[in-house]
Image 1 (cartoon, rainbow, N blue to C red):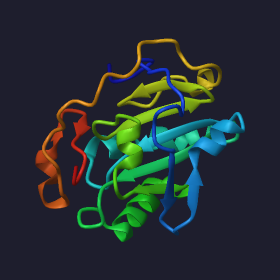
Image 2 (cartoon, rainbow, N blue to C red; image 1 turned 90 degrees about the vertical axis):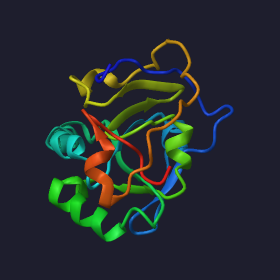
Image 3 (cartoon, rainbow, N blue to C red; image 1 turned 180 degrees about the horizontal axis):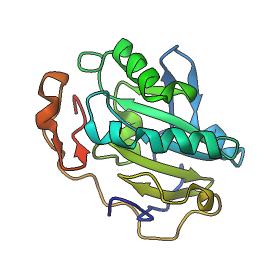
Length: 183
């Protein structure tokens, strides 16, 4: 469904490292945060994604209320040819996302490693696996600390929707989900 907990249990075994650079070029190592026992929320979004814009106030409120217990990262997937860092920074500021690091997944490695199929997608990771996966923010962030949920492993990535660029962004969103750019 759009709101978990349709999480997939898993760990670092067999998948690429979870790390990316933010807009200032600083590297953020999600695996290291998990190894320290932290809970990590990854919010995958795009500047042109209307559903992402609609859920932004809920994400900003979650960061304000739970940022001491959950490490939040925004993740903007897409190659430099289709995602403009200045536009990401402007949009992040306009939506209130400048209060937590915005990671650029330029080669979609993080996106693919976590089997993210479109935006918005919210993942909450805990040491040992996923605690939440959904296209809407969780109803209760406070319950998301703890062990990973024991469910079936993630299915292999399915064929993705056609790649979106900013010019075709309006056509790239179907319902409450937008295609990944440049995939």
